[in-house]
Every structure is written in C-alpha cells, then in structure tokens.
Image 1 (cartoon, rainbow, N blue to C red):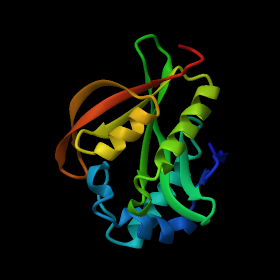
Image 2 (cartoon, one colour; image 1 turned 90 degrees about the vertical axis):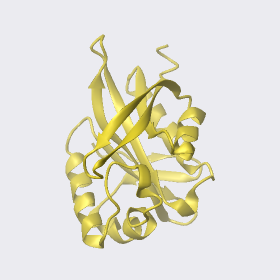
Image 3 (cartoon, rainbow, N blue to C red; image 1 turned 120 degrees about the horizontal axis):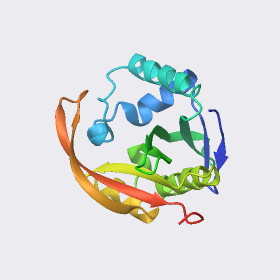
Image 4 (cartoon, rainbow, N blue to C red; image 1 turned 90 degrees about the horizontal axis):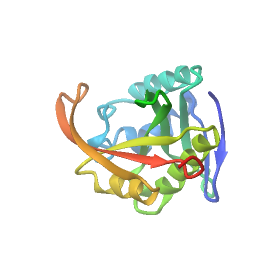
Length: 181
C-alpha cells in the first residue's frame, strides 16, 4: 500500500529504486548500522537497488507498508520504517510488526522515535489493537526508541538470522492502541 505520512520534522513516503544512492550511502553500506538487522551489509549499490525493488513489490500487498524517512529541512532520506509482517493473536486479531533502520549520522536525535510514533498512530487509526516491535538485546538505541514509543517488554527469544548465519537474543515488545485498550 502506498501511503505518505508527515510529522513536524519528517516526511514518511514510499521509496523507489531512484533512492538507491542515498540509501546505500546513508545506511545499507554501513556495518555499524546493519549490525543488528536481519540482512547483511550491502556490498554494492546493486544490492541496494535489488532491495528497493523488493520494497516496491511489497507495496502491492495491502498489509505491507514501507516508508522512506525524509528529513524535511534537508530533503534527505535518512532511514526506513516498515510493516514487515502481520501476525495473528490468539484471539484471531491481526497485529502488524514494525522494523526500522536509521542512518548513523541521525542517531540520538529523536528522529526514529518520531517516525515510529507516526507509524503506530497511523496503524492504530486503521483499528489495529497493538503493534509488535523487536530489537536485538544489545541494540540499546533501538530498545530505547521502542520504550519511548510506549513499548512494553514481553520476553526475550533467541532468533537465528539466516542471512547473517548466526543467532541473536531478541527483545519482543508490544505497543497497545490507547483507544482500544
């Protein structure tokens, strides 16, 4: 689904293959940024182009959202935030799962918290009862973002990341829709 959202400092918009240069230079080629994500650091801009083609295809699915995060005053793409999947709760209700990544240059400035709140508010406006977000236990910055957005810790699981060929301990969080309770 193609949607554009706005906050005070950010525009969340669909990405395209034309964004490959900014995405590659901004974060997909940075091993520090990609340390805790499920995919490997991109070795070339062609890896990033293929990734963005995948994102564009995902837009065609009604349950998928994939936003590029643009810093308005710089007109620069600084990260991405996506609905990476939908899971069913025991009561049968659908719950979106969010994932995100941000260029290291923009860490610790509140941008991801702002983007995450915007996306969760949008999802809540669509009637979802909650949103799930995961963060590798050692990724303190990502865990803090989730907590600032109202994430409640559920548990820690050991997950195998096939593309990385190793396992991580992953903290699971839930953000409840305040209007549903």
